[in-house]
Length: 276
Length: 325
Image (cartoon, chains in turn green, purple):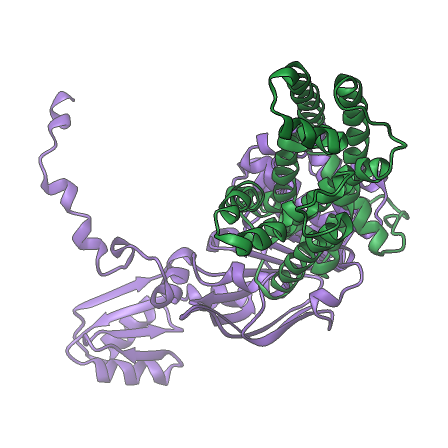
């Protein structure tokens, strides 16, 4: 062998292969695309900005707010604070989740990825692990920040402390909710393989289906609504259960996890059998 | 070594690769030749495990691609369509691939230098020209120092200097004992690069032989003889070792004999000659002739019969712009 294709005597430094290597590679992929980084920045800004804005509006309009609405906020200030935060920022998680996988198809990168990791499901698993952990860590940090921004704003009207029952679980739950939502979006993106269609699909699930389901008559609508992925999943980010909730926070999160797991299995089966 | 056994791939009711079997041996450049749509890219995708064959099997050094423990170390591939995320820099693209194989960072710089992309390595691949994209693809193929290279139309988009570079590179890689399998739809390009040729058309094998043999066979001189007594001439020619075939148009084609000798034999035998024409086809013509029946997307003007009818048209029409001259 000549020196031209590789330096004399130095066969390339090949170390042990394994799942850890694929995870490391997926981490490189995520951090090295500028749009991902900007989307994450947008997630933080939207979350914290809307926490301040919506909590501020709630406090400012307090005297004009009717008693029932006041009671809702008072019963669970944590839910109000966190909900104001991810009201919009959850959409960036949906978009990112879809893009992380669908952009590989739209750019053709998927072919390079699958040539490097022909055991396709391990590529998908590594991508899911990296993205979910990233969103969980960032989502939890943002969730705490959102809580500490909203808490003093609402303090006079609806006081709450991190030590109150269920509050810490709800704040961490904010990170858990966003992480599962990201994984849900990634799974749907892997099935649909098309960025725009995938984003439309996820946002349909998150924003459109819930109001549609509540239009269904009687208890049917109520049950369908309660078991929708984002509706069930958001329960984990509330400190107190409402009387009307059908599921406990962890049951709700479990339902969301089952939705996500089903989509992931479909995505994995398709990835194995379809031509890339 | 690459081995394809009875490979068949259908997309719906369209058959892209049809019962294709061949071997690609190490130590030489094997050209994979065929017109556009002949099934070259599909065959390569089947070998690389990106698509699954409906029937048959493709292996690399006896293993299926998906069973290779560190595939990039065994096979380096350049695909026809781009396989790079447009938002990622060349360096990070290679880094992400290198990490899956446990290839060190030093090697990334080496291959970037080798393909001449050092100055743009940190730039987004989306801004690369077609030629730069091809060079990045080749860097990715060479990354883990593979023993088998599969390159789909590598000269696409390269400038003349780039074409010479890739040609030299492929020959060197083969001389190092690697298996080099390179597709092209350009016969002339393959004639100067490949040692061996596998020619396909409409997904079927047309030829599998050395480039020399292919050229010799395809561009053999043919002497066309028009005569009222073709039988007599054919007999005289065959006595001297020439080979003859009588066409349906009454023309006798003579091979393995020079035109002058055919004329002498005709004179000696007292046969009347109406025409005696030596013909040697170009390599490109021979290739077109060979694959004509199997061209998928050929325009009508590309077929030899249609060409003369199409050609006179511009001359028949008076050209107004000619008057200004």
